[in-house]
Length: 312
Image (cartoon, rainbow, N blue to C red; front, side):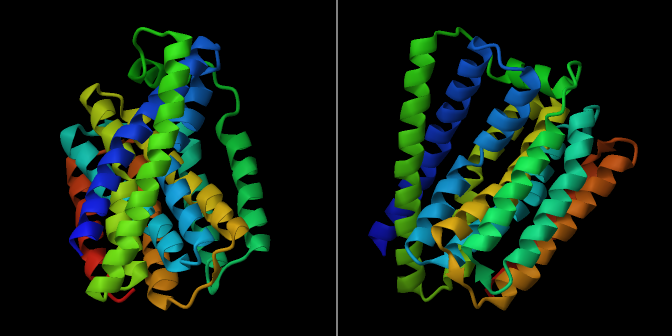
């Protein structure tokens, strides 16, 4: 068991560092290539922080471990909008000025609801194609041209610095390789720990694995909140959940997640994630800000959900 715990810890640490380097490198390359700031904010920063979820769930699905794959998706979505958003808002109450973020919120709720429906009984390749197709449609809506949207400017400021193309290419490649290595270690450690400790793979995927793969979002949120970049905080987390539900879920289906008999995971946990996202959307519409009191509610909802995940 010591080896599996060590692999879990090293995997999480490597994921947190390497995926951050991957996102920063990719975003800086995009800046050098004069990619639109809004695309950098939504696609590279918002979706790039979900690279660990994508790799871990794809690897788990390929290994015939659908509970880990789906548990990671559902658990990460709960962590993002419960624990991480709550922590970010406790640092700094968030004002939501970005039209892109406000457009992204209902899309994210809808995407998570679609995933919750598709995942009943497992995900096959047909459902995978439908989820990925929905991601393409959602992305088209989200990045519709808005030159003055503050989300883009905040993203460029977050990844600013001395920009040298060759160095950033090397950073991006090494970050991606490190993320892949961290995903392998995290997955092996989690599965071995579940076997040895008698824990359900769905529970481990929805808790330990999900928290580990969500660390890049936490890093970005803390950095953005300290800079007062509220739109980027919320845009990153909503974008991550949108990506998790449609792209990560779709890829898991395409790889071959297969049948899944875990009612607590596909029922309670998946529905709880949708409800939580809906709650965040309502908070955004009350004064276009999320307060510390509302952040405390989000953290409490996550804490209340954890004991129920024990049945997964």
